[in-house]
Structures are given as C-alpha cells and as structure tokens.
Amino acid sequence: MPAKRAIVLLSGGLDSATVLATARSQNYECYALSVDYGQRHRAELEAARRIAAALGAHEHRTMRVDLAGIGGSALTDATLAVPEALAPGIPVTYVPARNTLFLSLALGWAEVIGAADIFVGVNAVDYSGYPDCRPAFIDAFEQLAQVATKAGVEGGRFQIHAPLIKMSKADIIRAGADLGVDFGATVSCYQATADGRACAKCDSCRLRAAGFAAANLPDSTAYA
Amino acid sequence: MPAKRAIVLLSGGLDSATVLATARSQNYECYALSVDYGQRHRAELEAARRIAAALGAHEHRTMRVDLAGIGGSALTDATLAVPEALAPGIPVTYVPARNTLFLSLALGWAEVIGAADIFVGVNAVDYSGYPDCRPAFIDAFEQLAQVATKAGVEGGRFQIHAPLIKMSKADIIRAGADLGVDFGATVSCYQATADGRACAKCDSCRLRAAGFAAANLPDSTAYA
Figure 1 (cartoon, rainbow over the protein chains, first blue to last red):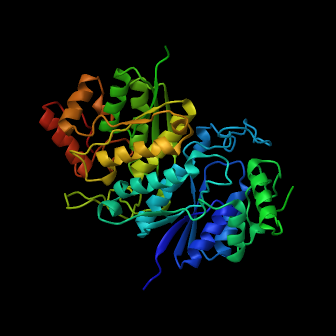
Figure 2 (tube, each protein chain N blue to C red):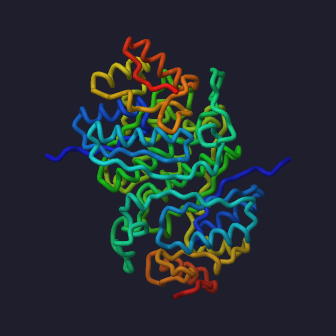
Figure 3 (tube, helix red, strand yellow):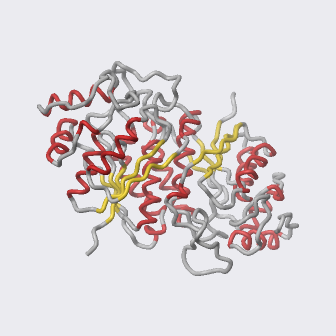
C-alpha cells in the first residue's frame, strides 16, 4: 500500500519542524508547504528548505503571496516595529487571516495531489494570542474544507491535524528532540538577521527560550 | 457618518461586476480585490481594472498568488485544455480551493481596513458545478471568519454577501443592466484572447450567451 500523503505547513520555525517530524513518524508521505508572504524574517524560508530536506519531506514548495501589499502587521510592514516587551491583547505581529490563507493554499495543493490530511503547527498554549491558533479555528476550517472542495463534495474527509495545539512550548521541544529535530536549524525570531540569528527580545524568542529552559534542554538557537 | 467599507472580489467577469454595482448601490465604500493566480485568461485582470474605475470602487488591488505551481486545473495549467463541450461532474476548469483562497485574502484585507462586509459573486444556479459556489460554502466561510480573526474575536461580525447566489444568469444580467454595468467591458471567457475577446465555446461563454438570450438583452460580448 502506498504511503498516505499529507500537506505539512512548514514555516521554518521550531513548532512546524516538530510537526513535520511528527507526520513523518506516522508514515505520511509529506508535502511541505512554506509561504513567502513578504515576512520580514526571510531567514525562516531558508530554514524551511533545510528542515524539509533534513526531515525527509517528499517535496517542498514555497508559494508566494503578496500580503505585504495590505500591511496591518509588524511582520509584513517595515514601518511597524516588532514589540520587544509583552503587551495585553492580540499583538501587532498578528498577520490578518494568515492561517486561513495558509490552510487555503494547503487545501488547494491537497486536492491536486489527492491528500486528505493537512498538518499545521498552531499552538494555543504558549503562543502570542493569535485568534487563528485556537481549536475553534481549526475545527471551523475542517468544516469549511468539506464543503469547499471537489474531494469533499465527492465524499472525501479532510482532516486538519494540529498535533501541538494543546502542548506547552517545553512539551513541543521535548517531542521534537525525541523525533530528532535539529532545533539549531530552525528560525523562530520575528526579526531574525538575514543569516537566521535571533534577537532574543521579541515574543517568539522569549517563548522559545523559556521553552528550552522549562524542558531542561540546551538551547541551540543562534543569537545575534 | 462615514460610508461602511466592504471588500468586493472582482474577477473582471459579468457576475462580479454586477456584485460591485450592487454593493455600490447599497452605499458601501468598495475596496475591489482581484487575484492574479496565474489564470490563462489574463484579460480578465485588465477588465477588472476598468470595471473598478467605471463603477466607482474606492480602491482596487490585484494580489498575486502563484497557484500555477500546484496545477490541477485547466485554468492554471497550460497543458490541460479548456473543455468546449458539457461534461458530467465537476469540470477540469475547477481551481482547487480557489474561492477559499480568494475569501482568505479578502478577509485579511477586510481586517486591515476595518471592513466587516465581503461581497463575492458566486452563483449556485447557472454555474459550472464548482463546490465553492454553493450556499453551504459561503455559510462555512462566514463561520470561519468569526473565529479566524482579531476582529471576530473582539466581537466584530463578518458578513459574506453573495447576492447572486440564487439568481439565474438572466436575472444577474438584468440586475447588472439596471445598475448600469457595461457588460462589454467584462471578460468571462476561460480562454479569452489577450485583448479580451471570447471563444464562444467554453462553459463560461455558453452560460453567458444563454443568459443574454434568456434576459432578452443584446449581448455586447466581443467574440474572437
């Protein structure tokens, strides 16, 4: 029997690398999808390429979408600063409808290759408060996928896998380490340097460093 | 009181032009969004620009997404022919997850400009059998929008308007004519020439021609 195919959204960060390793450990033939949406931390796209190869993705594609044109986020608008201190509410690094868009692209590719499984590394615990990282969002997208697609209408059953959604950052790091993820190759920082070194100040860096500390594992992140 | 803002998906075809005219007639300040997804009928993007201007869109943007890379449709894969005869089932011109993707882009832009209303010209009557043109799809996307966005989480109520969804092509043409749409400026053909002339043979051309005949209105389409 041929391996089941899955689309795995791969940002190049620690979480999605762990998700790819998880899907591989479940014997999926993995089609890794990265999205170049004009993010300021370009280094994560290069990291995604390395991770896809290292973890045995069957194929890796980077799709381009010009979200930068609509702005509204510190990740896509160079005139907005990435916050370096915690603030209440949904932060300015939130990219409007980003995961909806990413899952849409994944869904389109899934239909083309006949995959019914989509993996995404969203997390609703140690996260930045983004609305599209919550179980309610994943459930709603799964419902949508059934009615949005030819495969769904013809009786296929799409499943959106979010294996990290209820894990702490420390749990994710432990799981990734067990699966052999080379965290040093991943880039989480929202304002990483061109060669992928991290600022140690943004939300993403702070969550990541706290995760390594809580997991009691060495932090191999390259800092600027 | 300032006008309410709406995103209007504008393909450059007859249906979405009528939708833009409808939204304008309801006094929305319209932000027209076209998507360059590598479609073979490039002339519709030029038509969209003309229509946005003619119908008084406040702003018009064309976002690029490289769907061509995933293929799977006669509209994005030059090696697949556009059918020129009716066939059972969902046709090869179906673009996987296209309307999911378009609405995702619209949702992102809506959040940025503070719009709660998105207009889309899908139609479930005289259509090509696409799954993402049905009321169930629109309803599922509206549910998704509530949980996917900062605005939704903060209590905003997104509405996906699909004013044509239950209209016949003849009804749409009559409505558009009443609202002053210049149908000669619209491009529906799946394989239009570079200057927008129609083949008269594809599904889209046949539905359009039959609509003008049923509406008993002159067909101003430029044929090749």
